[in-house]
Image (cartoon, rainbow, N blue to C red):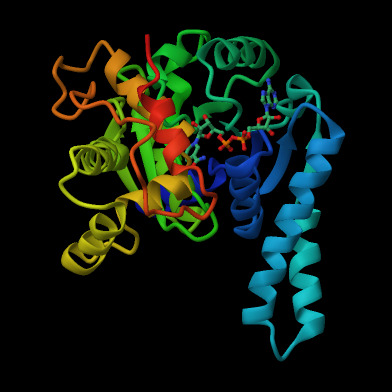
Length: 310
Ligand code: NAI
């Protein structure tokens, strides 16, 4: 029937080989999950030394999975890890790495010029059919896509940290993204066993658009002396059922990342002025006494880094 033909043809077109550019926190998680779900992965970073560390961190993460899933079957566990690692190759030359790629997922440093330079070069090196995506949290996907001649085959795949644990994937389309591209990206997300949500190229997408202003308002409450760090965290955990309070979460995400997201929201053309919680009306004073001890102990420092704006 026509229907089964469509199914076969979409399967034939499905994304099989993935190039992940950037082997940092996000890139190594993305590479791990893509390989675990049967995709062939090329992971790219600037040096072999970094790539060695990325692969080691993937191996460590897989070993945690094995401990749980293969407790009774150590041989099976070993096989599981070596099969997955066997599907991940590494490269320092990003142009060479896309030669045989169905999909590029970029997860390099959050800098628009560096990202544009990368994509402009990949655009010449990659086959026609290759779809390009960015995992950016704060930059408009459309501003990155203009560096290529394939805006119909461009979109956003926004993963969450830690990638192997977090179920959600935001699939982002720009006005030029074709339906075919968008559907392929959604299908790929599902093949990675993520729950996908669709979103336009709007600042913060869905999750950060709602989560970041909430977190900033929590900081303002503390800076106004309305409540303590600890009590705000306790309140949101026990009163709203959040697994982490806003300060724990900020510490986990990294306040540098939070600042990037805020800057992206504020700086975006799409963004209305006077966004309710930004810029700060009550700048956090770096001397604000804090009873909150972050895991990495840098909440105070990073709060003041966020407001340290011209
Ligand atoms: P990271 O700093 O851990 O990793 C970035 C990696 O990219 C580094 O290993 C670096 O050596 C490499 N790199 C930089 N320039 C490169 C280039 N030109 N070619 C190849 N490799 C290059 O950063 P992280 O946290 O993994 O973030 C990466 C991207 O993911 C950013 O765009 C960020 O906004 C986004 N993101 C981050 C999340 C987070 O929770 N950290 C969550 C969702 C998205």
